[in-house]
Length: 205
Image 1: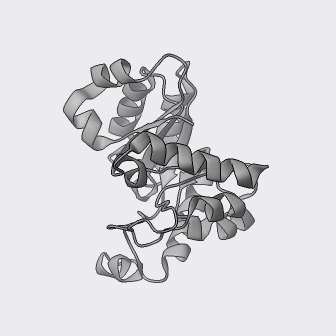
Image 2: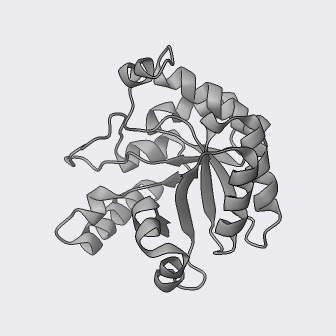
């Protein structure tokens, strides 16, 4: 396991906050979803890599040149993080995509963007668990799939529309699960995290 550090924390506390809360050697996902022109994203990735993240991400919708620039910038660092592309946010469904001019089902757009990310040389994508099987068929077993929108049985989905339980996501072939509010919003976050770990350990056994 490890930590995911997102925009809320980073905006409030910045790099100093990251250094304060991440123990040396702990894996962490710097989830800042960069999306800008290639030069700007490359500079942001270089700055982010100075913190030593295990994973960081950009929006695939920024295009192939932007993703390639992010890949090259990450390769310069000693951290060598996984470079990931965000495909379609798990809060979006087909209706939301139509509103922004994207036709077709979310899975079609996810596959389109994931293929582009792979061509750009990134290590993997951020996707919903519902697209795992299709992505494995399209991008192969070595392409990393980092899966948010994970909701243990009985958890509220909130603003997430394409969700799945931890066990289902692992069984489908997710490499990393991102589990936020079911833990952070629980009365006892540590107990909630431990319960999910125990559940997944039973599957692995």
